[in-house]
Length: 79
Image (cartoon, rainbow, N blue to C red; front, side, top):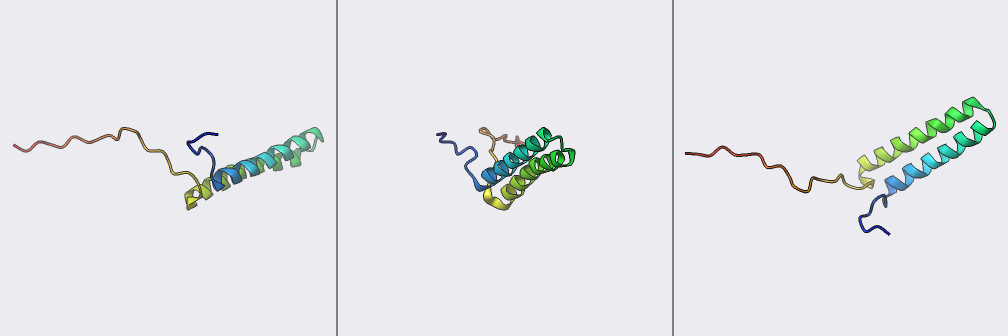
């Protein structure tokens, strides 16, 4: 397992599960030649991304990575 914690959050799991269900729905309806059902699956895929993003914004996801070397602005020298 990765020690970085990549994706081990409720937001990531929820978004992936919803998107996976959307892929399954879209695939099944594509085989059945049902266009509205296919697009419903595609909507579910997008909903998974939105739900994951909203949950991350609510604090249930991983914090954004910060730069390793922060940029320090030059201070004018006093004479």
